[in-house]
Length: 266
Image (tube, rainbow, N blue to C red; front, side):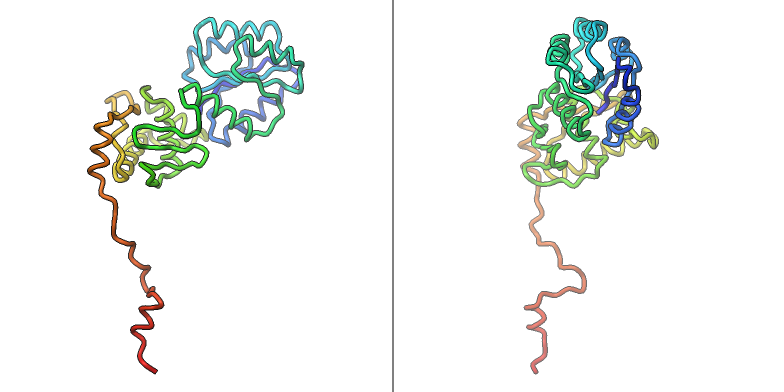
């Protein structure tokens, strides 16, 4: 998830210094703004963002106007107003009326804030629950697992995040730079060719599990996830051949019954 974090608060300047790095540890890419008034222009010039997080001491007339300007420009980015302390119900109502999609109160548990951000960004993409589907592939965000027609697919953490980004932005062309920004928030990014490696591995693993092709390459630009046709799904299912042989016993191991059969009589 890539978000933009803005604030108009002056009484607690340390909050932004703490909140941004804390979210980064959860894999969130944070672009920080010192002035909430710059929010509309920054979203236009530096986007796309999955969510905007705006911290208020109390919603002032100027900051409420910033939110209204954002919405009047046609920007539909999910926005959480993070109110410091426990402001009045009128302040909460004003933030919602001005254009915020949700209101949270800071300080709060970071895991709870992160879950609310994920839920809001997910619903903005048309997903009502943590189960993301594309064709016969199911990605469960809360359990951090992927399956094809009920068969689990073993993915690394980076591969899971890559597939999650693709499905959440289904039918949207994503550049390699966008993937690199999402996957390597810690800054330790390898060469952008790693994106091609991820796509190759995902295609191989999903196909082996019986998934229909769902990742399209746009040469010279990037990749996008698309919804495969029913015919493509049925064809993938019909060509899938699940392993029927039992896994071999570990080397040097023999069942107790077999040992008894081969044991010499006393």
